Length: 304
Image (cartoon, rainbow, N blue to C red; front, side, top):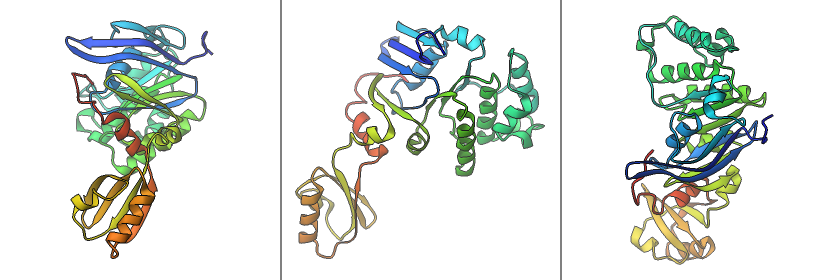
């Protein structure tokens, strides 16, 4: 337990690169044992915030503490493991040699065999790092993040380049690892990962936090419903139906996003009696994400 009870505390973080404002006043507290997803469009400030959390970048203003101490201290103590997008693996060594080298740098590392087993890279232990596929390289990076046996695991787009089967295995391993009360912060573009795995979802846009809550709470911010139906109609005409805000076409199927789905459905059936395969659904995490970040996130200059 930390002095202030927080695993991570970010207070008033600001970071600019020249005229580019990457982070604009981020306040975030993560409790020990929480699994938090970091969402945001490209350029929202996720990676810059993670870099400041890890002590890789110094904030222009604000403060960062990890388990009550500076990030550099927490990292030196082996309490933090990180899997980042940037950085190449050491060349001309085998996977096992690389993981073993990293383990030798820590005072109380996880056993090499255990880290490799959790990352499911035991079968490629003798393979050279330069011969790895993109998905294999990601799994090796995951093993390196596990080596310190950390209390906090920070993952930046961890499942990029992984196929569906490997991605599922990765999250199964993560669930097992976090079952012992570890804290996890992960950034992802796969919204279903955030919805399925995270206890809490934090959404960034233009360097600011625009939403913070459970997946259900984030989805509840979406107003209206979507009518999905197969109909022979002009998209422009569908857009004039009462209660319809936008129309998207997928072949012969149309998606009508509505602020009044009852009025829209009645009008749709009245004007197009041949309409069929009708489905009405509430907003999902993707809808909430687009609603929270879509308006104006391209304005100004924002770094990733």
